[in-house]
Length: 287
Image (cartoon, rainbow, N blue to C red; front, side, top):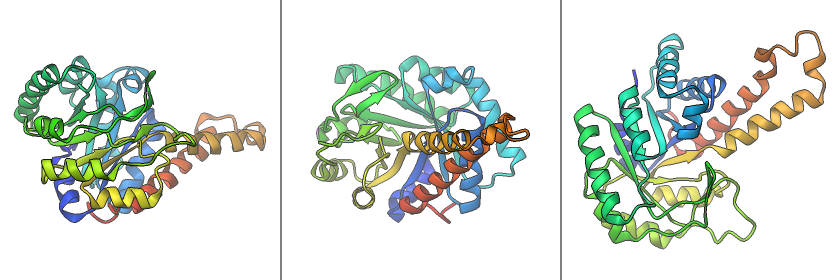
């Protein structure tokens, strides 16, 4: 059964580790992440962007697939199904469809409007026992066509949004989505430290977890980051394994063209990436 992310993240913050949010794109992705979480006895958050939700035929399809897998694969670890960078409309649609967690990204609205919309969604989520993530300061890089440079959040604005009763807060600390450029300045630990001082025990979220060096990840966790989002890295490992399979001509041998065979190496590669991340984040055995 899907659970809210609240309990797993409260435990992570207190225990100085982080729970990974791994974005899903299809059945293979979802299965690979769930099986790895179960094998490592790690809590996990399945992230769905609005684009991926559309690609998978809508949020109800996603909920049906995930709930079916939890049962058929006998998944016993805590699993949250979370809308990633949700619009106001998207958040409402996911609440209806049966997600257990949402992110409302109001970072592009004036702060007053971000506050009003966040408040309304917090009330609905509380009522339904769901967790809700908010964002302050836009996360850079490209996400569904939106490109930003990676701003640092204002700690006072973070406190203002945190005080509305959200479960977790994504604060921009110079992190970006996608691959990091050569001239990336690194994470601003000063900003993170200032945000944590203002928000206390609230779990903080690090977006754009792909390509941030391991020591920076560990430092961020020590400063209150309890949820780290990974997406691009799984896509790259899937792509690499699939390319290798085809370049080696395996799709031309016997029934190698069967999608179950064709997608198997990529699926295994995702498992390997998820395992590496769970070990790095310290969530293994914490279910």
